[in-house]
Image (tube, rainbow, N blue to C red):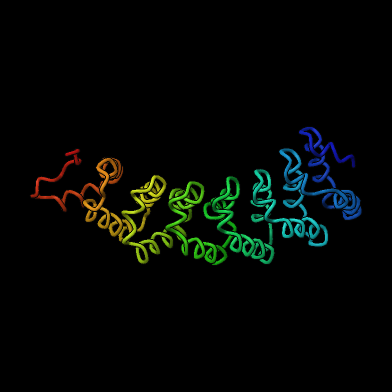
Length: 272
């Protein structure tokens, strides 16, 4: 197999079609593997066209004797792969196709390098994928990762890339995960909710968390915000919280009304 054709769009399509034709024939697959294994798989993974070959292969070929060399490459070069745009796509496919044992290995690598991944330009998308698209993954597989994120949730919530992971979790994540994370935030860091609202990234995390379905968690969060609005020093943030949250959440406006009933304070703050 001429290596360079794998790195072109038409060449990649041809090789993918070849895999579709031979993956059920061990002799032909062995010949293909011999050629592929002698090349730098990393070049394929990083290529905008070559990565589709790897994804096609691991989606069709399930016998370990035919996939070990690719999986081992991924395990041994995980750090380099997770920091590459197309490498993240390959890792997503790996997670969706791998068996429980191999998925556990990759999760351990993710947890062991979580700070770097959460704050990497491309790497953080892998965490988003796991928390939002784990249809084939059981909750107990994801829970160690969720727990690890929670250990540093305040710091993650105030940084650009890591905060988008948590925000996406509340926006599109599975209900078991979003509830677990919000419950942790309320139980362990209730005194920091207003601090997060004051942060340019944390604000949107709290805003998205208000879409949670569990009523008692939502009400608890709203009451913390409403009862502590006077602790926000920036009038612009207070106005932003009141107008934005009231317009999107009737629960918020109702609780705010009850809090201010009779005190003539049901209004957006103005500058003195």
